[in-house]
Length: 51
Image (cartoon, rainbow, N blue to C red; front, top):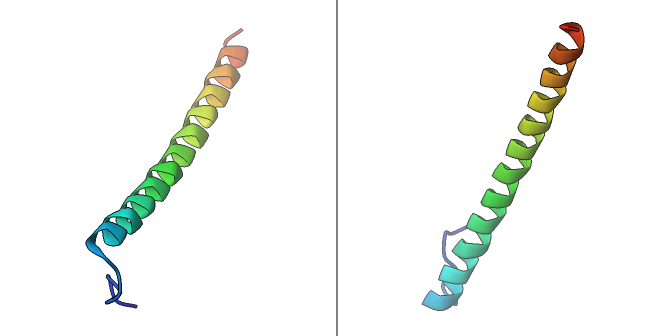
């Protein structure tokens, strides 16, 4: 599949790239939230073990 379809206007290309970038940001956010939740879980576990 080509990077830019031949019938795509420059604005459509920018909008397509923006949607792709927004999806990538959403995915990175999901990974960060999962990592932070795991970090919180591990910190709580360590706190409980230290008591």
